Length: 107
Image (cartoon, rainbow, N blue to C red; front, side, top):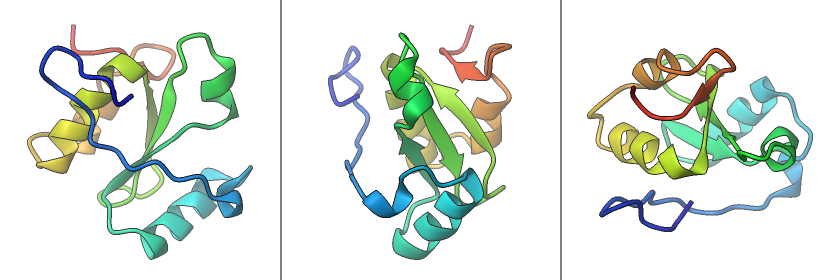
């Protein structure tokens, strides 16, 4: 997720914290909202690791805490860049996922 796509790159901070392992989304949201000053987070969970496309889970921590969608790594820059500068909101990405709940870019 840190390799540039054209001139864009996701600016992410990697965290490996055992307290988050195997928690339900609601608990991850509660912990993350308490521990970090972010409006969203990416989670590389078991599903992301098992799927050949590696779609990471994106969790809303601000507008609709707990709302989720998945994003393929090559599109993570778009989510991170636009949400970080409030150019787009979480609902725009969540509403643009494919039938399987994965954001693969705007078509």
